[in-house]
Image: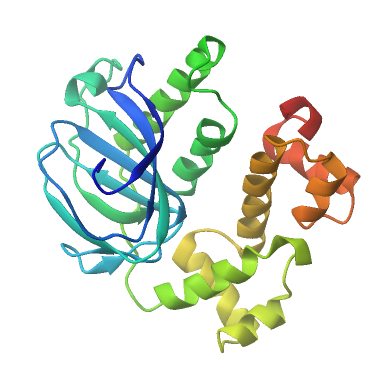
Length: 263
């Protein structure tokens, strides 16, 4: 992985797991994930529509979940930007969590689990991996993420809902935050579907409503901009909110604290 992607952050001295890393890859073509000596839980943070699994003949998306067991060799191609959070762990790590029986780790390529994705937001955007004060919170989140593997994860949905091309088109439109939430009629026209059909197909494909996805993108952008010196009022407008108070209310509802407290 290190030969074909940029490691934005890496942390190895953690209790409970072997380590975690935030990777970014901009295209790059073929890649082989060759017989790793640990399990990998990969949770896509952004992009991913250009990622193609040669083993399952399926394409990725921005909320995809992949579980890669120890020793499994997987083959991929990538034609676009993608960011992944990787959590590395072993069977011993799972048994140390005091489960009666650690689950068998089975491969999963491009599954969906909104819980797993939402749990990564503090890890990626709020917690400082190098700060001793955040270490306990990081380790608790990692254990919660791994505990999810104790129940069957949703498998990839059958083809026939929304194609990766249509999902990419919708994602591009939703990412245009400054213009505010796009109208359903406008989105439906963009993908040549009825509003009702689009609403159902998007929820069936991603596990989220269009409104939930737009708000998630707003919160992701807000977390990025709060790391800058941009005034809160300007961040609100950049994220598609009509006012700073509207932004503050939405941020507090999503994260349990105000933007000022987070900054």
